[in-house]
Length: 405
Image (cartoon, rainbow, N blue to C red; front, top):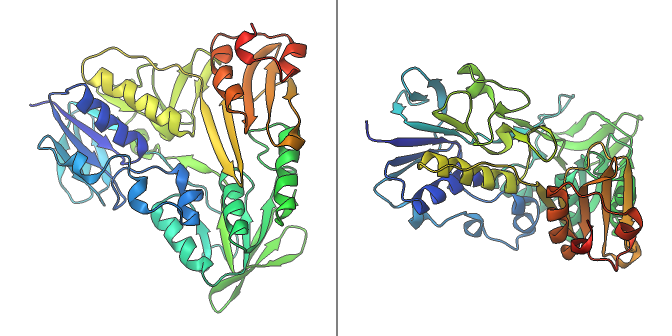
């Protein structure tokens, strides 16, 4: 059989697989299978510039449509892979067709975590994961004044910033007692809470959602765990995502908070790779297996897998990074702060340009940089080499991170 790489999923990482395989002059055929109607596109702008209308849909594409017009590339959109037959080296599609593979890449990504409460299926309640989701939200905003956002993570706060800037009344409901509690320090949470409140956003923290009130089949309010009901013309729910691992699991591949892969992005089956949100990889830097929800992770894993498929030898072990745009603030996060025992603020948050460094047992494990790109860039090398900088020097914003040891 002629070599054929089948890619299941058509997100950002999948697009990068195709790009890298072409760059490496891969001699086989490439088949890209996606459930959406869209070619691989960037998801981060969805809750930012695409929601605000600043960016048209065609600008979201990883590569233009002409890129895929190659006799060795086949794109099958609005198509679902139902099963992997590992013994035969074949995937079975929802159409009943079968495709053979010499290499299979699972880039199945993730799906939104949904609320299971009364009224959760009402019109006007939205989740944000795809272009189509945002198109529906934008259409709903045309007639909505009062918007309630459930969840104060990246997505919820980015949506809050865009919708509030557009002039809507906005309330954010969060079960935790502070915003972005999973990923930033209390100091940084407090800063962003002040920013949103100053912009006119109502924050309701430490409060759950018990259900939704309806009027003529459309959402009219959000019932809170404290007994109150918030009026709402439109609701956006952002309470996390779940990795799409079911296809791999049904094929007998190991799953542990993601599809288990090695440093080459291979599963235990040497013909099958997994990348992006759905995969769990070993990290030398953090000494544990990680599943990361970030574009950087998906793209770098895609490059690693593609190089190996094309006959090279590449390993993946990079410092993760993430970002969030809210109002005029760019939050850039490098590393993982989970388990930190000390947080050190560099600079003055009142100047809206500062960073927060996280230490564990004296070692620098992460930095959150707010409008401080130099700290973000220079922190990567420190974290990668396991640096334990002097806390006093680290706290001094005049000290460049690249000069620390």
